[in-house]
Image (cartoon, rainbow, N blue to C red; front, side):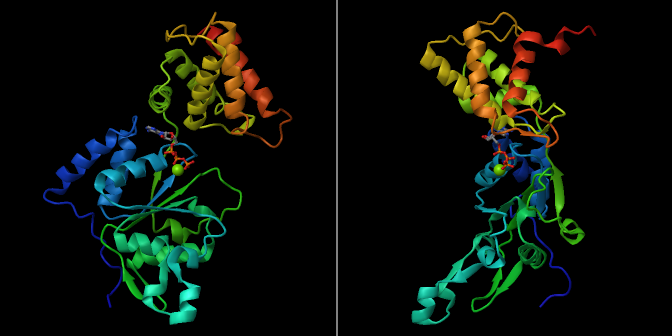
Length: 325
Ligand SMILES: Nc1ncnc2c1ncn2[C@@H]1O[C@H](COP(=O)(O)OP(=O)(O)OP(=O)(O)O)[C@@H](O)[C@H]1O
Ligand SMILES: [Mg+2]
């Protein structure tokens, strides 16, 4: 028994904590393009023993950051997706019904769910789309976070290893099938807001993830994808994932068609590029992005029409670039 909230210890790191965290930080940074500040804040929160909510649109490095941190720190990462099916039983675990018939309920025939797995192994439980989980599931999670232990019927009390953390993520623009998180939930979590990276970082990500060697194609894929986020008639544009796919598909199409990819980074704005190259980019753009952008319900346009307009603006017109000042 204990009085009040238990003290959550920081991650057990040997020797001087600051130096150990700095060493992990340096190793993790090698997996990432940019995100130095987010990495610092994430590491500080978990090293200080806190649970955390990562809030940002899709494709903004949330999983990548966590995978890199846990891999370099040697901590298990347990994934669970928040949705209506994530009941408290699925989160905690259940007794194998066939074995229960033969052996009755025993701790041995309990099949641990992701929460118990993370608590026992001292892992990070990563609950994606946290706000889609049912309220009673959130309450189970909050109790485990607050008490660092959970009573499981016919199993006993499971005490979390010191490095157990709950990392929740949510998309701030997600409003389908979501629970509005109560203030009591928010009051228990630190929050790290993550936005899109700048164009240079996105070019770095696309180059790294695709191996595409044409700086022109990488720049065009990033610029066109970013443009989907600037439009008033697009409710949610595409993340860097879309740019990665535009670049990969355009490179593949170019190889199949015998189209040469420009190997010069200029011209910028892109002018006088061969028509077979820009046509290939348009095909890749449609294939990669038409299912990924979500238009405002009030507009008549189609994703294809919006993408074609962005492509024309980028390669042919560029009114913004041509305008004086
Ligand atoms: N900073 C980065 N450095 C290197 N690669 C990155 C970076 N950010 C994103 N990526 C790449 O972009 C893709 C999407 O990133 P990630 O999966 O981390 O997004 P997410 O925030 O978890 O998205 P979601 O909310 O949809 O789960 C991945 O392929 C990842 O490799
Ligand atoms: Mg993710």
